[in-house]
Length: 389
Length: 95
Picture 1 (cartoon, rainbow over the protein chains, first blue to last red):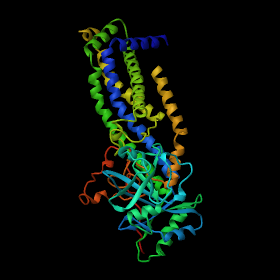
Picture 2 (cartoon, chains in turn blue, brown; picture 1 turned 135 degrees about the vertical axis):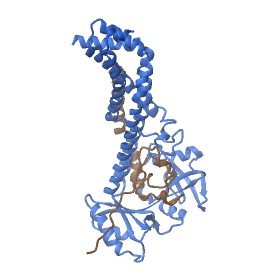
Picture 3 (cartoon, helix red, strand yellow; picture 1 turned 90 degrees about the vertical axis):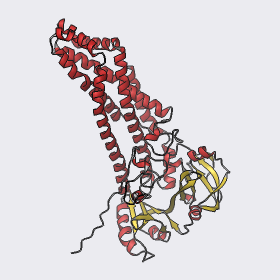
Picture 4 (tube, rainbow over the protein chains, first blue to last red; picture 1 turned 180 degrees about the vertical axis):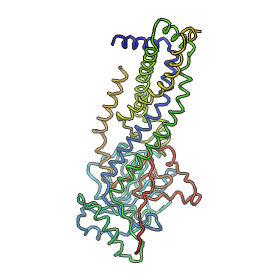
């Protein structure tokens, strides 16, 4: 035990003695690990918010299939869905997009009775009169919108809207560039009276798959518009599949790409860790001449690498944490979340989980070990006189 | 050693804060709108599929600007999520 402790002390001394080499190595590792940790933590943060979106969303979404794409659905279907066994709530929704000046925004129209009392706005209040809208925090900040501001948009210039309130930026990343309005106003705005983007159906537990099948097979065939196109039904199971595939696939691709990047970083680190290689060769020659075994030399270098990894991986994680939590991911968040700009108008969701952090440490260990163990072994197995030359 | 302890404490605090803060507002918002948004994109700049595949599960960006060509959507590049159309079997074989 004493022998191993002595080797550990020697490894620490070596790191402190070769300050430049150690600092360069730690900085290189941080440069490799920082984007990896940042991307995975943002991915986990968005995944968490998406899960809420899926869980709190409807059990079934019904639209119309026009030539393979989603299309507006007639409100005539509402009553038929309400009468189905197992259905607890049915409401129509409009989701569309338009430009607010040069900024693309999502327009959502919902029934005013769906607004919960617990919703918190950063300014103003929920809809009170016709034409009232709630705008996202990002939009309000960019165009300096305040409650009471009246505006119209060129898609329907005759429809006058008034900012009644502004969403709290903590609501979700998707509320930042969103305009929420009552369903009737959204119908008038898009000039689509009597139609919704989709009809949301909430069911009793366990009923969703049966009802989805029933709607697809029976209601589609007995449509109030018999010559109309078929319905498209999406239930929560399908949405959950989107969720799993959307995040796992991308995270998998990202990790695979990063593994390649790590593999490429190994020769780079081999060069960097060989920084002061002549001196290191001489050191190994001297300690071998004083009676050290090859295995002891290898253990000392492995311990050095372990200490370097245990320093650089936590530093990379702490730096990513500070950058995302304190500076809201300024400049780097845009690489991982599309359309946020240099300074995101909402809190960047980031979640630091133990497993990705452990992977960061593991990658650091692999990189440093592969970069130095072989060269050390080669030096340690040649005659000390030759190594010291 | 101090760095490791600080990192472990940071991760633990982050986990704790995710469990207790903000979720009430996120839940209220999503419940109100019936579930909007799933992907790592704040606005559907190219098409809806990566913003929310419930609204448009079909990636119609392959039909423009070059029909059948490569999609130029920015949400296809470096974001941390990507949704692709889930195939639905519509084949019915008649005997």
